[in-house]
Length: 334
Image 1 (cartoon, rainbow, N blue to C red):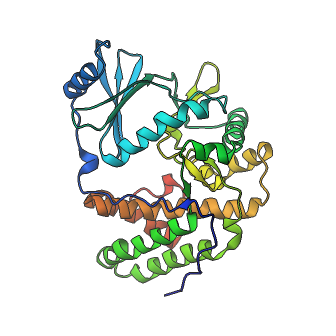
Image 2 (image 1 turned 135 degrees about the horizontal axis):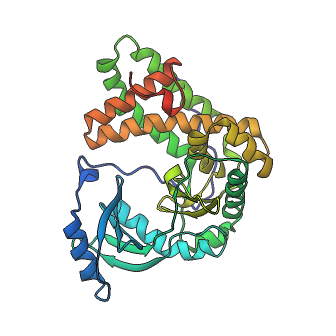
Image 3 (image 1 turned 90 degrees about the vertical axis):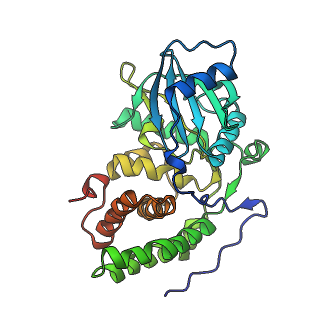
């Protein structure tokens, strides 16, 4: 097994923000509509719930649309509740630094479980599924404004620094501990080849010092397409939501999710408006972040005890490892 390089020196106040240890079943916690209604009205006595409907659900939270106007988000575990606490503190500060609207919590309370419950005025629009030159330019402006926030100021907001070298060292150890044994069972003929792929993938990223020479910046940390709200009428980005992953770290990391959704052409256009000191290095990092996330998702589902989703994500890892597919639409199970 290839020995990994030593970790580069990092500032004393850098923390290793590694993934939480997921508990089986915690992301399947259901929050019934009636329970949500009661918790909202009990937490905010001056708020009357006239209409409430399920909006979305993730590993950490469930959201409801209330009275057609407000989004109420319920944390489902301590990790998500802590992330919400962070958003409560930093979003008003971030809003003063960027033009695009972000959620500002008008209602801050607790559920019967004592986990956080917050509500904000809905940002009208839909997920940004496709981009054009105009929208790419808007995203570039957002990135420039966010990543230009003074780090000393962000540290006063108690945003933590993430050491990406340590983070991905731990991700590799998780892959060795959780994925490799499953590979032997699921794909005995391909197991060694897939393991070699994973080892080489991480070793290449971790051994290249250029990957860690970036100037730290404030990150959104989870810029999925559904977190970018698009207004069809104005043809503008109406808002950026779900800031629970905000931190200080490698600004290139913020670009990999848009890259995974919108493709290489998006990155080429993006760089016209937001130049990078080393486009070649950036492309390699985006490729790594994208591939590594497939492995991370497999680990996460194994930790959560979700065998079906773990197997599905392992299909994706195998296809990328064997060169059968790369983009999301190419990684669907046959």
